[in-house]
Every structure is written in C-alpha cells, then in structure tokens.
Length: 412
Image 1: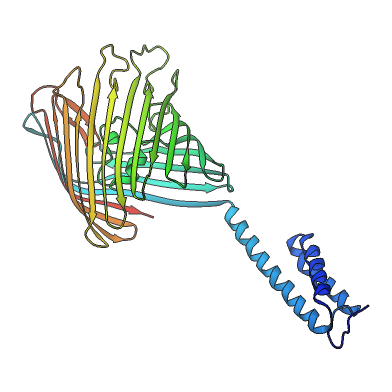
Image 2: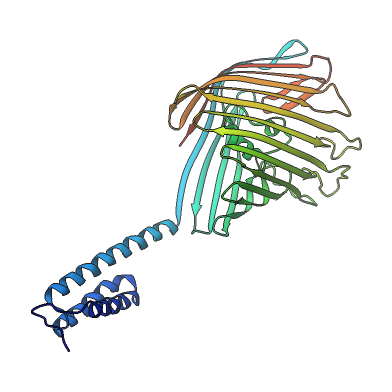
C-alpha cells in the first residue's frame, strides 16, 4: 500500500529501507557519479508517488551533505598519499678569532676569519605512503683550507614498513649513533658530538640501514651494514662494517642508549692485510625538556680504531658531559666538557681535553646565534679533530687551541 503523499504518512521503517537503498546505490559507484545516482533514484521515487515532496527534499539534502563529507575525506586522503617534493637547507656560519699553539709557538690557523662550516641542501621526495627518497649535499668552506668542498652526505631510498614502526634505507644515510646524540645535544652548529669530533665515528655512511621504534616510541633502534669509510669516500672493500644502537625512554624526557661498531673502517681492500677489526662501544644517558633544559653524558670505548692495518693493538676511551638551560624564551646558556685517552696501550700520554661555554639567542624561529668560547688541549701527540690538527709528535705540552666568536645556524 502506497503512503499518503498529501499527509506524508510514510513509516519510519519504509524510510529506513529507502535510505539503505540509496546508500547502497551511492556506495556501488565511483565518487564522481555517486551524487547523480542518488538524485536519480530519489527523483524516480518521487515521480512514482513513493516519496512526498518534503521527504524528497529532506533525503536529497541528506544525500548531498553525506556526499560532500565523503568527497572531503577522500580529497584529504589523496593529498596525504600524493607524491610530494620538499626542499630545505641548514647553514652553520661562524666569525671567530683562533689562537693555536704547538709546543708554545703560535701556528696556523691562528687569526680572525669567517667560515662556512656546513651548508646542507636537502631534497625530500615522497612517492607514496611507503616509499620516499632523500638527497642532501654537504658544502663547507674553511679559511685555512682555501677551497670549497662539496659532498653527498645523504642519498638514499626509504621504505616505511609495518605502519611506520620500521623503516629501511638503501644508500648513504644516517648512522645509528652520531645523529642520535646530535638530536639530544642540540648544539651541533657550535660543535659536533664526541664521536664525530674525535673521528671515532661518522654521521653518515653508504650501505643498508634499518631502524624504527616500538612500545609507543619508548623503544628506539637502528642497525647499519656500511662500507666503513664514511659518506665522503664510498669505496669498495671485501667486507661490510656493522653499527647498531638501541635506546629506551623509561619516563618522558629521559633517554638511555647503547651502541656498538665492528669492522675494518673501509681498509679491508684488495691487496691490503688487516691486523685487527676496529670495535667501539657507546653509552648515553640524557634528560631533555625542550622548554627548560638539556643535560647528558656520553661514554665510549674503542679498540684498534687506528690499528686496523698495524700489528700492535690499542685502546681508547673517553666521555662528554653537556648541558643547556633556557634563561628565557629566546636566550640560553650552555656548556660542555670532553676528556679522552686516545692511546691507552701504545702512548698513554696521548690525551685530549676540550670544553666550551656559550650564550645562544634565537633571533627568529629558524635563525640562532651564539657567543662561544672554546678550548682544547692535546698532549702526547697530534690529533686530527673537527677543529683541525692539534698537537705535535714531540713535546709534553704538544698543542693548545682557543677560539672565541659568533656561531650561527640558519634553517629554511
């Protein structure tokens, strides 16, 4: 029996059946034609007298509103998964005065100069939700070198696996330890972290890298099989080096990490005879509250890092203490102290001490400057570190390095 059109007596059950039929028709078609199908169906029902005019208008309005919501959701999903390319960069620039001495005599690069320590130009491309790629160049100009150097720091393809809980990278990519520490330390533009500064590690290398997080991001991990010679030298060797790291955040802000390295540092090439595999163990405890302060301690122990091709074995160890506090929204105070025994077995007098102290100021969201004083003392030998070669092969007080100036970090 047909409903009374004039008095609009359609039953609730009848309207529910009509809504279900319309929904099924709309769901059976592609998005561009769903609205047309729903309207055609409603027009036929009205023409046959099954729907009263007010019911027709109400259901037509509901269908169009529902279609609009679906269209907006699908547009957002399409935008999220669409291929996307972003370009960015980071520059480390300093203007400083250096006073460097070897056995008490002033030596190069003493003097005043502006240096472009690093300029990273990064291109990220997202193919879809699973695959992406990264290309990062590393440019630097240091006055005492007299030339600009350009490297590929990162060049990899990445696959996101298990809903983002794990990723895999092929190419030159972040190594497990150094970038992990830099992210907690947060003053990389002033000085590289302990392993990078002393050249017991590198921030990027060529190989296969996997990593991710678990337990609601409390557990982090990374593992790399790499060439061992760093991103500046993608050489071929007879074996791969392995580096790994695991970290845990038991409470919000507190991070505990451990890492290892084992391999021949790219020296296991055809025609060469290796004597030892280089090994390194790392540990870190840090607490970070980005709005208030950061504090951390890093420790390392390395064996045969400089003795891969030489028969005598050797051991090195050291630590780094660092901290920073936000005095205001823009102003911060930071300090750091490093100490290392560079050759415990072969030359126990070979030691390095380093510290810095500075004030930072956030001029803009992506522009930070810092007034910094640095001091480094190398005894019993010569160390090629991030601040150049310091020390001498002779003399008890072999090298002193003092630097005062302005360091800046600019991001875009």
